[in-house]
Length: 185
Image 1 (cartoon, rainbow, N blue to C red):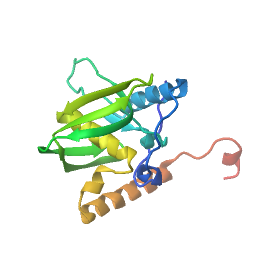
Image 2: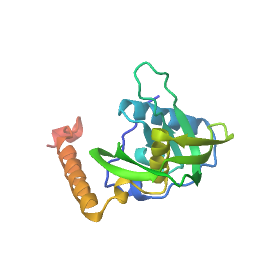
Image 3: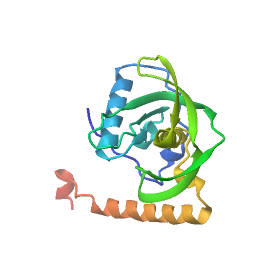
Image 4: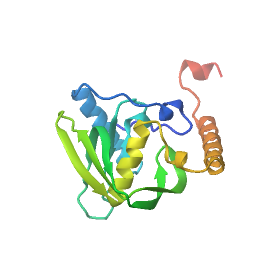
């Protein structure tokens, strides 16, 4: 499969609400594999389709972090939280679309999620710990919500300004075009 570029905040596609997946075909399976490859390469533990510019309700995740432990990649299509525990837990979150920035977010400690797999089969499962944080974070992406949206306006603004600067710096670092474009420079 191939790696896909991860969109960086601020990008309007990260604030859009993703559309439900209705077609379960090879293109969807390729997207899922590309997303897993991209997530592992980043490296991260979760990735939502809007983060790679695809406004579809699909997420991938694998919260196994221990060296030597068997990976547990998951692909959740049209995931939806159907139950949350009353007990909340804080966790310091980060995001592949907001690199090098972290903040404590408080979320339900446990969640029950329904989703469809790549073959169109329905599933339901309960997540806790890091898995609960990750699945909630990624489902938020499908609704155009970023973890910084849980922060106060001042801290959110500081992070957004730093990300705007990072994007400007990255744009300046792009290599000059090759071929005919290079001749015109």
